[in-house]
Amino acid sequence: MEKYDRSTDPNEHITVYTTQISLYTWNDVILCRVFPTTLKGAALSWFTRLPPLSINCFDTLVQKFGACHKPTTSFNINCFGKYKVEKGRIIEAIHGALWKGGAKYS
Image 1 (cartoon, rainbow, N blue to C red):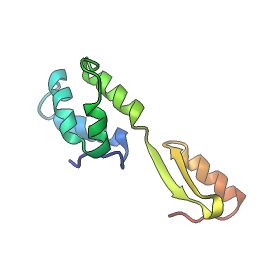
Image 2: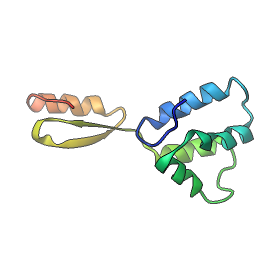
Image 3: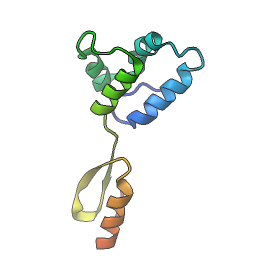
C-alpha cells in the first residue's frame, strides 16, 4: 500500500486501508494506531498536529481526515487556466468548458 501524501484521492486511501486492515482486525484502537503509518509528508504532519484525545474512534478519524483532505482533480482547459474541481463536479466542469468551445486537457 502506498503511503498517502495528499497527492491522491483521500477516499480511495481510506478504502484501500480499511480493505487491507480488515483482513486482520476491525478493532477500533488498532485501526486508529496503525492509520498514521500509512501517511507521509503533509498528511503525516496533519496527523501529528491533531490535539491530544481528539480522536475517540476510527469513524472520528475518518471524518477529520476527510474534512482536511478534500478530493480534488486538476486539469487545464485551453486559456481558461488551471482549475481545481471537487470530485463529482469534474464532469460538469468539463462539459461546461467543452460547451463554450474546444478543450485541451493535460
